[in-house]
Image 1 (tube, rainbow, N blue to C red):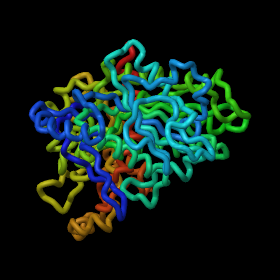
Image 2 (cartoon, one colour):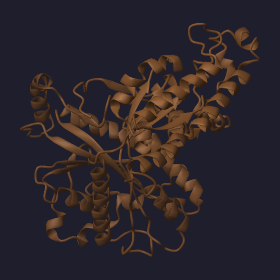
Image 3 (cartoon, rainbow, N blue to C red):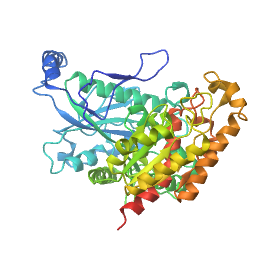
Length: 507
């Protein structure tokens, strides 16, 4: 997506320090001609101050590289042919492995790696997969420009060092994750200050040796959560992520299986095998030829994901109220190979939804429609909002019939749980008590949606049951999803949507 309003920023976190600020979309920053003109004098002066000769603004494809020692790289630069030890003309790198840094953007070449006990300056004598990756990405594309943001450190684990924690809570996050987000901020800010544009294209991840004692389930869940969180923190819900397999020394079966499971789990992720690689030590660190091979495989994997992007994907309209509007549809498109359209309107009931089903849903000609209403329908404290349960069932049935009549498949959801504590700080408890109480009323609307799904023979995602014992999904207002909750809801809905999309696109 192209954005010209690059000056807008998204305040992030870090207690006691300046807030991390990202442009409103890191995915693409493109300036209008008038804005560029105002920056010409500044960029020229900045170029003089930095000792740079900036002739014209460049446009970069940005890739993020993260992980432990094999992403950092232990391949020996001395094993490279002379021509491969030369700096790239069309690729730059921003490297940060505290306390070592590249001190800003530099031409890509060997040496942006810190081997054990290294105390010298950069570039060092080692390299990672970035050289093979850049060479493969630039092959046959002389006009392409790459910018690699590399934040990696040997001996670090996903369990602690790379733990993404909770969004906006640095105390819950591992030091490497915090440093990596800071590295991205610093690197992209420098591109912006230089008057250059960029597009965030993907993340390359290679890690796992330090988590070899983890179970398959634990490592897979941690890696899934890392991917979800970094997409949230960067504001790119469908960021492509490629995960690399650690070397098989017969002691890493669990983590290898987990990495493969994550890398083959959906259209927005990819997997890089370590088959046919060799190490210079006893089965851990890839040698120079293998680092080049892995880099080439990362390039092939990311290109495969990007090629899938270029295809026409099924459309999914997410039709609902503020729970939908809050953002799960954006995450859904990163979990299933679809274009999701957010048709959520705050405060809406099924009666209001019927009046906009044509313009907000059917006019998009979707293959699948996800329907999620009920939280406002059961507002017995509001004469304007309240939709009796029988009318609620009739409305849902009418919406489903309209969608089917237009050729769309349907997923129906029950309303999610409500926390009465914060809820009744805004609503009249007495009105609900006179109708048997909030839990009983919610249960009636849950049962109504389930009954409609059964009679209409459409798949049901029972969010009421699925989320009841998962407090992480709910925000402090007792009704709407948290950031984590959007991802949780999207994951539940994705299972039903993926099945229907396969049916819709199968001849």
